[in-house]
Length: 373
Image (tube, rainbow, N blue to C red):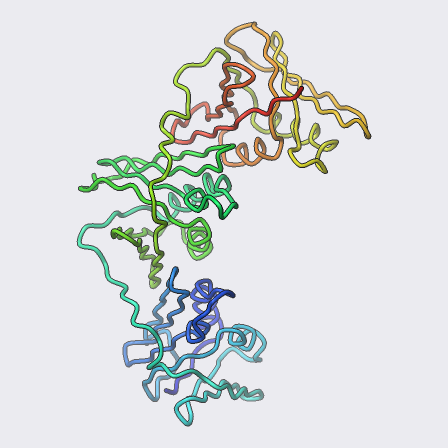
């Protein structure tokens, strides 16, 4: 294998495929990136068995192809080598089958490689029936839900996001049992099969980093135990989490006693100020009291002091309500909205707080209150 390529091109593709390399790989060959060069172009593949990313660089984007071939280059050093090599063009040349020279006019690295015959056969096939979504919609869906997944491995299903598809409605839900984020997308074309799957959160967050052009479209290919996203010259395949995701449809109340409308930025800033005194505490609790057309956001720390912040709001009634919650969870949820105003829905101090945009019903954020005695 021998070829010459622009540094910025190979670096972009290596950066993206290397996202599939795990530091906890127990299979040594999977610590490498597979280079497969043909007259059509260069394929790069990385996998940790759970996540596989493959990219393709067409021959027109390669300066020169002299010899075809396949080799596995250890991922631990390759990215840093490419970044630090001087010049705009880099040469790759395999010698003695399991050694490669990576060089420019003034610098050269000789690396030991791994045998491509030992690399597992990874099937990256496309489904006959797939979903087309705008890349921007996928990025928004991930951003508006991923923060609510659980970090507790004791409940593995909650470390993923739940995707449900019924006809032309796609629902994405994430919850850690203390908060919930739900995003609904209406598909251009109905999907013929009912879907209820859970994608590992750590994998879907890597997909978000790869998608940079929001104007592009992304194909979604769904299988019984895996899902594949096709974006530009990238194939991104993730295993699914086994099990049935909790039924969250009953978590969100349909009727509310209290509906408060407030400016999003003002509400966020008020909570941010109140949270200053409790940010070192585990739950970062602030209290919200609604009285007449005022919202009072307050917090108290016995060793520091207390803070009160007031906002003018619109309300559907004049009944008083006082409710406490995690400032961090509330601010995480508020960051996902894009409108100027937000609606806050409540019933009692022990029932969930629900947030919705004033104009966009596709996003719902839910936070459980915290009892303070």
